[in-house]
Amino acid sequence: MKIRCPNASRKSHWERVHASRETDEVSWYQPIPAKSLALIRQTGVPLTAPILDVGSGTSALVDHLLQAGYRDVSALDIASSALAEVRDRLGAKSSQITWIEADITEFESSRSYSVWHDRAVFHFLTNPVDRKRYLDILSTTLQAQGYFVLATFGPDGPTRCSGLEIQRYSVEQVSALLGPDFRLRTNEIEEHRTPSGMTQQFLYGCWQLET
Image 1 (cartoon, rainbow, N blue to C red):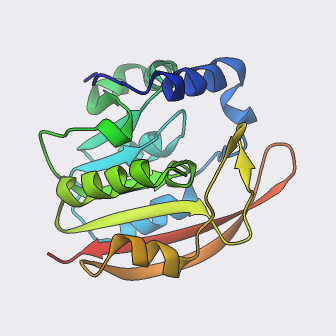
Image 2 (spheres, rainbow, N blue to C red):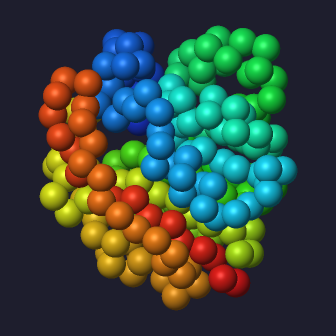
């Protein structure tokens, strides 16, 4: 699925990032996305539940979700080159994934999801308008009782990443932005070690939409 991306400059930026760096060179690289996998498993959703990985890039999360037996996984990213790389990596298994090329702030979904996972997208939305669009789309796309699994730069995380300014968050700030319809289920801080040996603080959390 390909959705028109009106924010051409944002798309161009991320196409350049993925074209200029190997998968294991980007700062957010993880050989195994252990915390994301653990939080998704902890939701208890069935293996048939629809899961959306927002800003999937070249992450190995979709590989591991398939390996774990999840059968309705969608990967969304603004960069077509990133999605193509993962399709090539998965080979024949790529047909088991729904591929969505889109800017998440312009995403219009024809279906709803039990789990919305985002590692390292939300903190790039420094414009309040983009942030509101993201949250509005999240609220209308997530199923009632569905789960929002987020990994974003924490209070002591970087102030810039991939040449862009970012927004750091505490769990209280994220909860306030989500509003009363979302109930915090769990959260923790991770000190992520980048391929270059630097440390980045990530906040991981899981919220449930209760309406």
